[in-house]
Length: 94
Image (cartoon, rainbow, N blue to C red; front, top):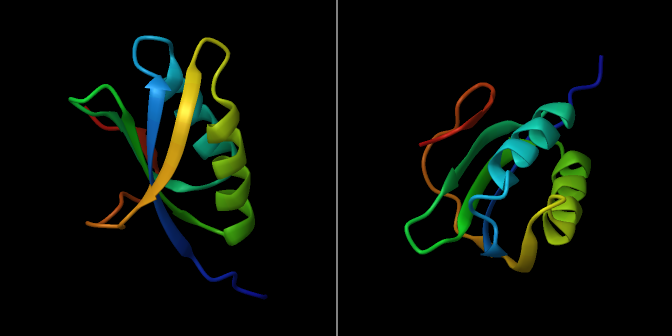
């Protein structure tokens, strides 16, 4: 069986992304793409998304983050340095 290597990517999403269901939308998308990681609100109004998985799944997540959830308005999705360990699943971090 061929093992796909895991890739890591962390993002900061800015715009109208808090209070509009963006974290829960990202949670469902991350789980659908079989990624592991976290999504959390930041004090500055942005959302941080930290993920690991296949390059293809991460590319699809990145494209979706740029489009945003139904009620969000995404201004920017910036790749940030990957730090810390990730959980074995995908979850909302408070």
